[in-house]
Length: 117
Image (cartoon, rainbow, N blue to C red; front, side, top):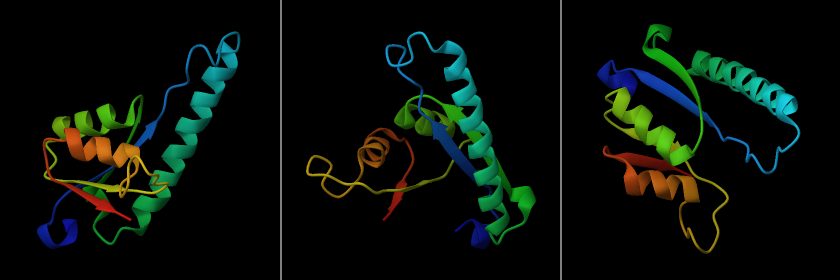
C-alpha cells in the first residue's frame, strides 16, 4: 500500500510497562530490563525496516512504552496516519477472531485498521 502511494511507513513497537507491584524492590533491575527491551526493539525494527521494499527515507521506527491500545491509537493520531496495520495472534474464546490488543485497537482507533493473521 505504501509503495503504490509513495506513502510513509511508521513501524511502532510498544513495550508494556511492568507492574510496580511485580517489580517492587527491583527498581534498578526494572530500568535495566526496560533499557534492554528498548534496545532489542530498536534493533528488530531497524532490521525489519531494511526488508521493506520502499525507500528507507519513507520508513520510520518508533518505540513507546505503555498500554498497547493507547499508545498505538495515540501514535496514529500524532502521525496523522491514514491506516493502522496490526498483526493478531494468540486468540482465545473471549476475543474470538482477534487478539485482545488488536480487538481494542479496532474498537478505539479513529482510522481504518487492517488486522493481519
